[in-house]
Image (cartoon, rainbow, N blue to C red):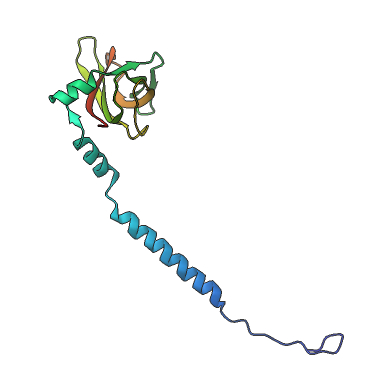
Length: 171
């Protein structure tokens, strides 16, 4: 075809863009490498189990020494909420205070909802340090929130008990 100016236009055949292909291949290799590196890490549950295994547990003198300096209190804003399945969920708010001289780097606590006769209805363990905060220094206070599900309307939810189940401090 000739244009108005009388010049013949070149008809170009478009080929495959080699730069685009190279970019796609590099992207695929980068994503595959990231997935491979992430697959080498142990699962989060296994990492937490290793952390808790390295902490002091009830019955050891170190546990008794460290746990006496940890004060856990329940805030007055604990909420009971009905669910769509007819059960009740409790949102428990509290604070943890380290009154001791050592920095806590692992802290696991257990919260139990009890009846007025001290029978445990439901309980839940939670790794607070290092999950919520990297460490709990001397004199520091951190908030804690946890949810316990599955209560019936007839349950006598009279009291909340906190207990330190595992603790470790920096040397």
